[in-house]
Length: 489
Image (tube, rainbow, N blue to C red):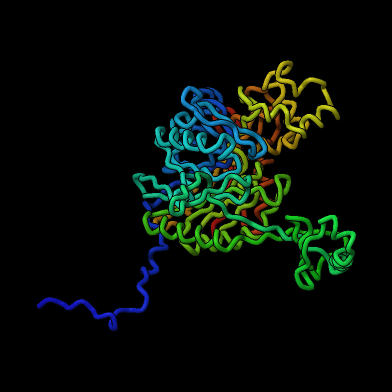
């Protein structure tokens, strides 16, 4: 006798998946090797094989090797686009063979949502994604529409089917993708998570702003736009001030709020990613509050925990070009910033004219010299870029020291072991070597470099209750250090 289909009155009001969809299902010992920003200009595999085979060995241990491709890979024989008027502070560019080169050293998953994704326009974005596809590297975070940019990428390994979603909180105004509507075509771009910074100030300082708002002459200059109630004010077009009763006069603390629609869309696609795979990685690119800040922006810890609650098995953060702390939540690693893996922008061979004519660099030339450094008829791109680095914000070793995270998981997707391998990117070497990663050592000319990098990360992670033990390891005649995160039983 056949069963009858339940009538509408007998069906549940809402059909939901069992809670087990959040669970990971991987082979015990499944390994993710995660790195930060990859700003690469040309192939490096052969050089790594000569100069840092130890680093290659670490990458080869990963079932998944994931990073953030923060460049545009272009074959100028086929490229039909142009550099955009807006860039993510620089028009980053890599050779067309860079994606395949990264695949050859183990990379098989790449996030793409970052502030440089649209440096060379939609044509550059499309070509980069095609070259990653050709190299066999799955990628997420950009696409021909918002739906495509938000969609997860998948890679199948012997130990798990893995998904990745990628979004950015820092980007230029022309970068977010958009879906089509009727006859309006979609816009290529990245998956955004918009944030609004609110500057928290003391009641006394807020009272000053309120008095200024009441002055007609001040309003006529369009400096103070609108007063919202007794405790919130918008100054200019983008400055938001709020009262913090605990703030001392003369101090400002930035509090960020995430766009609710963006966050809801990201969480929805995260759920879909996990429901279609065994293990899910979330990649977030953020520069907030700014590159110089070692603190994690206020919104991120709560957001990261929400990601885990909605199916994420780990967070890979990048953006500020230096390491930030590590948190562990429900056995899942939250890597708030892995710094740089490659930082090779000083070796770009081609730059748009906008770069040479940038007002800030012309002003820097006039202030510090030498005369003619911003003139492409007098200086090579390498000379200009190295000068720009030295007079700019990337003149210290901290930008060229980072870690590679080697994450091993139990069958249920919780951490089994998290090893942190310190790397250095040739800060003190030749210009052509600067930005290329190598495993850091302790007994080279730069004494105790590996241990010093790990000690910095240990200090940054302490606020999250994360304990990192530092151990000495031997590589032939050379001595290095490795960090081991203590995982609560």
